[in-house]
Image 1 (cartoon, protein in one colour):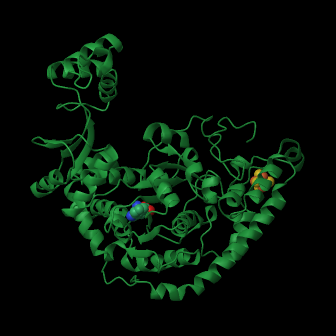
Image 2 (cartoon, rainbow, N blue to C red):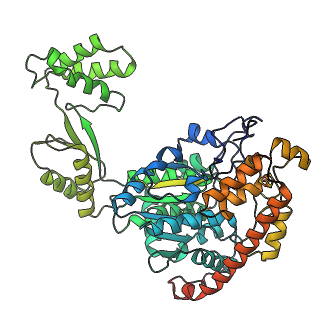
Image 3 (cartoon, rainbow, N blue to C red):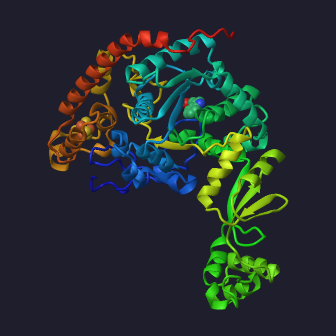
Length: 526
Ligand code: TRP
Ligand code: SF4
């Protein structure tokens, strides 16, 4: 990391990594808004952790077997709930990866990141899905079906050329997938207009099909779990996070039962629970019969032993109200949306002591984890979905080759996977760099690899799996041994090679695409 970087933790790491956001903070980055249909740039990735609760990928990297280079280099910087996916990978349990592509233009090197992420998960043993978001492209971006067909073909050829196995994995288009449509309809029953308004800023002018494309995406995200609930990761850019949050929410809303821990007949909140738990654990201190501590006595203990904040006070008052009722830990199943038959089925399936109430049943000999498992089993048995909340991983957006953001509407800012290799070479040669004004200064001060789009090309793509090579470029750059002219020449040559090779592979996989069960000629009009 260079000395002039004000945010050493925020750049991509020099141990094979690139960073371009280092100065964003110093300049006072604008507010971050995550808008799936807006401009996809993020000024300050740290805000995504603080404001949106995205977690840092680094913290779980160790638990990922054989991590992808995009993970190792911090290009994949964030996640939601990726642990269950990593765990399934480690244990050889089922898991899935799914992402979708709006076929609005040519696939470019930004899409390649996502293609690679899906393919990597497939190679780690996951069920892999890639979908063409044609309904979204038609409704939210106004593309015609002919345009969509043509672009879709190009996305899929690149995905296959990069190594997606269509026999093991599944490719589909939204418009063609009846199960996705049906699931979207069901999910739509549980999402209303105000909610979409709050999340996406929809208003009275938003067309209905655009809204339908949102529930379709929700169904896409949950589709891998239709056959059987399993940890599922959605690799996307952080602009898609609002979709991920809604999908996690809806997955939970579809569940038949909620499982909680309780200590008496009343409900406690998450904040109150630790206090009630503490009072229970201290029962020897106050209970006349320690195997039968009374709620009232626990309340007294709490007021004597815990600083009175609002959670403590409300816990105390609940305990006081329960008076002589014994305090006794139990696992509670709340009936959220189960049918009567399913609730009865659950009650029957609970082993050991249980107590049935109006909207819940308490089990006294069942651990929480076993209870969650049982709740899901019964839900599935009675025709529920039993969804696990989907997980996500987020990658950084690439900086445009001309500085600023990489944008499909500025051809020189990005490299299309269909670019003529010579054009790719030229674009890299004319790219902006993080170099100094003169070679002399560069030798003296070193280049700013953290702000260099060319360095990003090495780290995100050109160095491939070779961390040592990426690190060498970085070290030589910041150490002043590497000058931009030669560095760009090397990158440009590698880009030319990559494009030539990729396009050759695209031709080779034409047959695979023909054989895949995806119809690239839409019968739709308009
Ligand atoms: N909305 C995504 C985009 O703009 C495309 C998409 C549709 C998608 N369904 C999805 C992405 C499911 C991930 C998962 O690119
Ligand atoms: Fe960028 Fe290479 Fe110049 Fe360093 S030497 S600033 S990595 S182009």
